[in-house]
Image 1 (cartoon, helix red, strand yellow):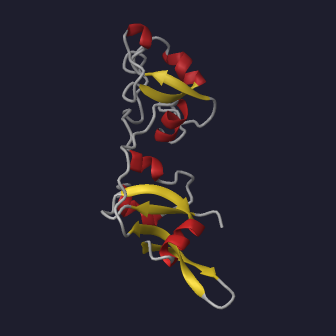
Image 2 (image 1 turned 90 degrees about the vertical axis):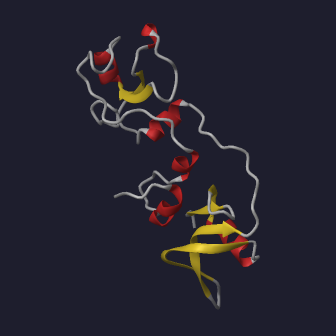
Image 3 (image 1 turned 30 degrees about the horizontal axis):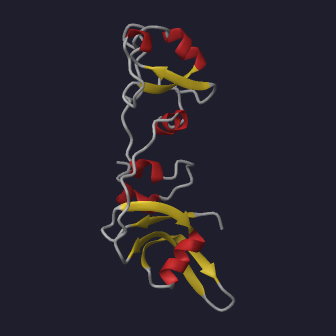
Length: 168
């Protein structure tokens, strides 16, 4: 069992992700309630079967410190879905400053994007407009909820309503 479960605070705000085992124990000990089961999956004992949790909500509100997303190389890649923002490839990724740092560009969420080495070299010391290389997506500062969502492509569609990642 290597699935993950979204844990919501009492007010339904996303709090963290935990293992299925931990979530089941919280539900079994009546410290939380199951909001959404994992689509059709069950946990089996010798004599019983229980629905596997996908989303649980704590019964008591937990005061959590503000959780921002650190500006790191891996987090920029994750925000950009591990794709070059110029050509879409997933190979040889590096970071690119949209407004080059030599021209006053900052090292911030709004100025950094994932780029392959080839596109980064081609763009050089120009802006995307000057290099005639439009960005696929405008850079943005991601929310903590976005980073809770499983980006491995394995689903967790049960989480979408709580993380604001519902696809239209």
